[in-house]
Length: 507
Image 1 (cartoon, rainbow, N blue to C red):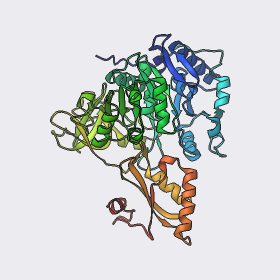
Image 2: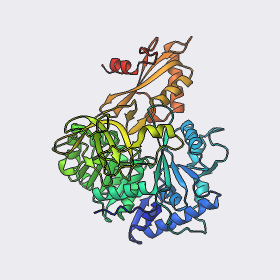
Image 3: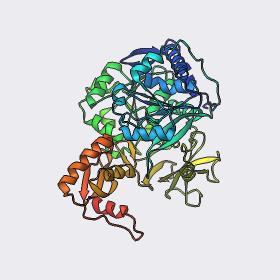
């Protein structure tokens, strides 16, 4: 039986033996004693910079030593950590800083040079990573492990909504602690395990690479990679047992040339950020025959909801599995009553992994975070996912469809509105509609339907549009294809007909 008593997040640095390795990277090796010491020094350094408990501190970093320790150090200092995806461009970073009210941004030196006047709000200090390395880890002070209320906020993770700019999901120490304990438990992580951390630490799934590994007293190996060959070399060099990925990464990895003895080093593969599908499951099983495969489903608002036991993967390759520890998953009708077996319904997540809502956004919080259905044993607030699923007679869940208009491409949840606003702001188009269509490699590919701005020919408009989008949007938000129209269709209410365009283009 798992212990459901949550602690403050920084105490994950105490889970391993003091002399056992906790973190390995280009910066060297830190054992758990050194990880705890670094956590304490960085925490003291942050407060010495004038930050106070409850302040938000943002980090926009590659997977450096400082980036890895920030979730723990901010927690120890009583601060709220706001990790920013390293792939974002300055406009998205500016929005996150302004929306979160961050008092400090710690940015990689190269990334800091891309910020423009006004991107960093008044009242928010900018500290480059070189400056931070000079003043934070070496601070003479060292804060001891904290013992505050686990229900207080520890982090705000920004995730795209189906409309508007990214919204900040508020996560408590308890949310993150219990999520780490739950994943370490069902993955059967042990101190001798080694996790190769290739996913961005700004995502809940990516950050949990570190947190669940430390919850098990194991070692995390952060990697910023450019090609699948980089991952293969890291597996050969560091001999990790565990690798987390998203479907587009798995497609690249199964197509790469793995020496059999290197592939055999991996004992555990985990997937989230989109369904694998039967074909990719079969290819993964063939490429990594010694590894257990864990398909998973999650959403930032509830961290992780379900996983499929590896023993069931071959017989049920399309299933999402069932609830992870500490999660209660219900499939309900519109009136909140439970569905029968094989009857589609909305997935609702209840229990202590449910986040605290959206930062500074009570209206959108009320839409997604609502009272749990009457059948819930936890009660309280639940996350109503908007995703349609079915539960079969064996109790296994299967994904049916997404009710909102989010695009899920290469493991990223992308707001179509953000792409559309950037397109119109370019001056090259009058109107724009972004939609996601099925793609074997990406999950969904982004298609952008536009009409040229007045007095612009299509070739000139396209050149201006592509240039602007490359400047303003990260690579994963770039359209896979542009579709030019003289005018965009509208529905009877006068709104742009997204559904009609999706049917037309999707064939």
